[in-house]
Length: 107
Image (cartoon, rainbow, N blue to C red; front, side):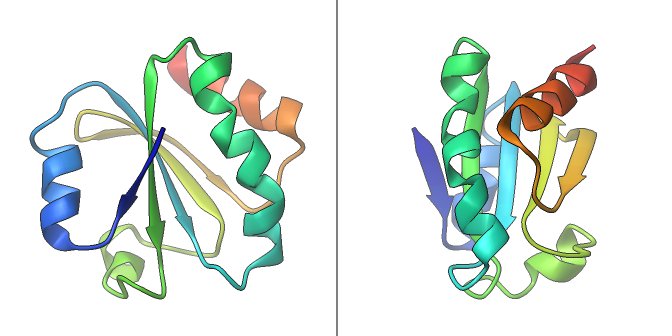
């Protein structure tokens, strides 16, 4: 299940109060590459056996995300283990390559 983050309190709840692996998607509704990545992003939970929680921030809704995450473009996917960034994917990827990148970050 993808958890949508709409506020700083949502972010605190997802990142500060919960531990484990989180894949954060920074995206925008108008972004075509973001739309194309939807299926791959949604498939992460199944592909990785539910070990990774999925969170999404609409960058137009929470404008401070640009500076908070040093955003360079959308979509951006950041894999966290607790508060440590394990890796970052910027832009469109074919689904299999997307999963390979995530797997590489985990090892």
